[in-house]
Length: 244
Ligand SMILES: *Cc1c(COP(=O)(O)O)cnc(C)c1O
Image (cartoon, rainbow, N blue to C red; front, side, top):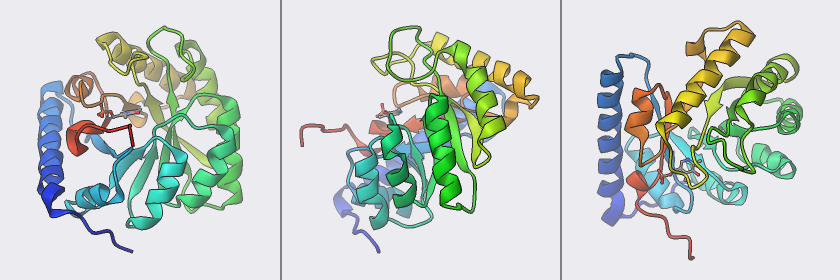
């Protein structure tokens, strides 16, 4: 199935994508690293047509926050899109998500053993060709938040996934930053530190674990501080309108 893209915004999305990619490249150079950084285009609240425009410009990694919205949009779009789930995932919606989105590459917001076990069970039931990627969401702000595990819980959760969830691939760690979705350098430093602890505990190199940090307002800084996966929405697709 194909979705018609609207000519009016077509160039805008393609241009914005190119611009963000160039800014990421410059930040990678400043960081002195060589590993590529994945740009996840965050398309929540945006129509399938806007995603198709980005796809037509060559983009393949997209992030969505809401299960029902993704279930509605994914079937309208090409099957080789790599979907990243970046919203809070309730255990009772996990089956619908995995069944309805075969192209789901990664759930970036795993913050409990219960959710990991649930995803592992469902991924096993579905006999997925590839393991389901997961990232551990860490609350790096030190402030009360319903989502993300505490930095002190990350190692235990990582060990649980590595040891007891064979259908999952621990891809890395993710943070949003502050409860208001802004972030401070301390948030990024905290995630880097958590990764070092997880890598040591699992006996793997830190480079084998990704860091998902950085959004429209701070993705360049995040890349300079080690991010390998930035999640950029409004800078690519324009401001979101939640009133509809
Ligand atoms: C919406 C969202 C983003 C993208 O935010 P922008 O500021 O629009 O780039 C990134 N990460 C998460 C978890 C989000 O919910």
